[in-house]
Image 1 (tube, rainbow, N blue to C red):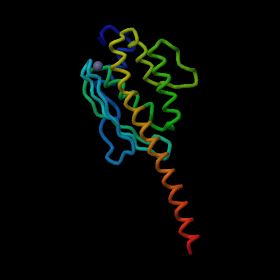
Image 2: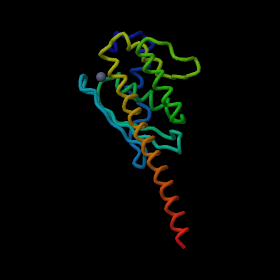
Image 3: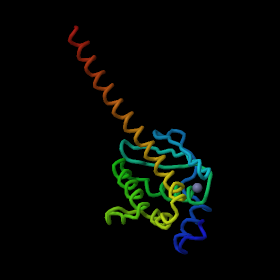
Length: 167
Ligand SMILES: [Zn+2]
């Protein structure tokens, strides 16, 4: 498959596949998510260490085809330093790119742009998309748990206030 891509795209993708940046794990990561693309046999697990709402560090582990692993390496690099909101924008831009839409000029896709060539091969779009689908799911869980924490904090404050008024 990679052979069929344009030269430039192919080089960037193969380079990330052979020398992935950001591979490994983060034991104390606040966001952990994993997923698989059974059509191809790709498996991915992402760890994101958060600094409040900013993604401080990203590591991934995986196995599968060159596209899935290269996409993960590129995505990990693009996500570090971004806020959760910016990460969602980036992911939306990648989904759009896979459907043939040109990304908003304000969004810097970095090496991820090399995946534009994949959209000519619909089966392979799933290989590339696995990486951002896994991250998206992880971030959604993270945001849900944040909301839960805030609610329980409010509850604690209320019950504290009640306790005080009892005295
Ligand atoms: Zn694949």
